[in-house]
Length: 419
Ligand code: UD1
Image (tube, rainbow, N blue to C red; front, top):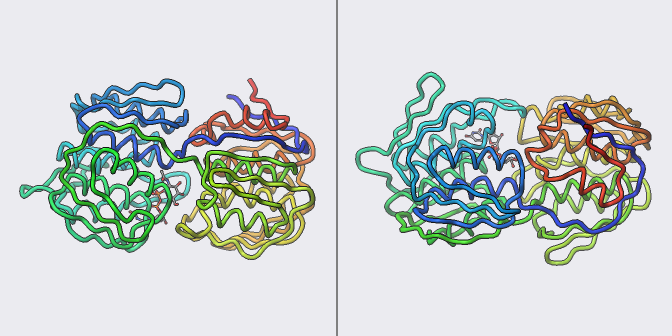
């Protein structure tokens, strides 16, 4: 099993181009199923979640090829609508194929994605949305069998009681295969939804409103081949910026829109970093210890992203001053806390709240990644820590970061993957 070995305390400096957004590219690749032709997706990151998505597309009968960061998908010969359990298990977000398959073929069969490392992740909102658009869904022994009802898929108004990112995307994809207009009220407003809308518009779909809480889709197609560039990964950008805040130094990230990271950047500024932005870049300078900041409460976009909670916590744990975190989106999202404590962090947990008291400097330890962002948080903490840290179970980190070690080395960090 390989691990990262990180010798902390080396300041970071330089410029880094951020890869494409994992959470955009997954629904966009699924949306390629709508097109009986070839789509070319640029800025497609090389991540294990993306490889798993390409495997699913191939299994369904599509051609899927990668050349550097460009992926070509040809779904002309789409021949299957069932995804076997082993591929579903690899990636919970493959539930997004439900909407895409329903829209193109009128039928989909998936194994139930079940729980995951962040605790139970229900899909009741996905199912309710699809049902109200005319899908019949049977749940049998862990398998979801979906098909359009006899009258076909029909657009209508859907109200989401929680602005779920995945349910909004699944409803948008299904709505593309409906006749008539679908209005999603209470839609998630994450930038990745705007990116999915951009791709859907590129293939000829009439979708508007993404980025607001009402998304409208005029369904029915036809959909045509298109070329599309995925937005930069705001959470990867946040990771490198928090890593710089932990290690000190001066780093610029490019290829990411600063206004998608407003909540994270304002926390970093409050903690004492100098942050400068231009339309597609963010630079951060951190010279002294990080201070405590106002409570960080995770919330749907444009609130503080749950995906950046562990990463910011890791930086502040090695700073000075106290910060209260409140995790409002997922139940089991403090699994990195025990690992940070092994580095000397002072973090008190009480339900959804975590009180972080900066200890000045963390120390190296042998640590286990618990989930994707929790694993990245350990790397962030290690960059600023005294001594050597080993981070194990890199499989989690590879789900969402392309060349994390190589990129950090290019910025001056002492990090190696062994073996
Ligand atoms: C997406 C992101 C993930 C991010 C999360 C929140 C992808 C691939 N993943 O996950 O990185 O952390 O948004 O920004 O884009 N919920 C229900 N019923 C449902 C669906 C969701 O109760 O049917 C609840 C969840 O338990 C959670 C909340 O809604 O408490 C938000 O989840 P959701 O926005 O759906 O997250 P994902 O789309 O799974």
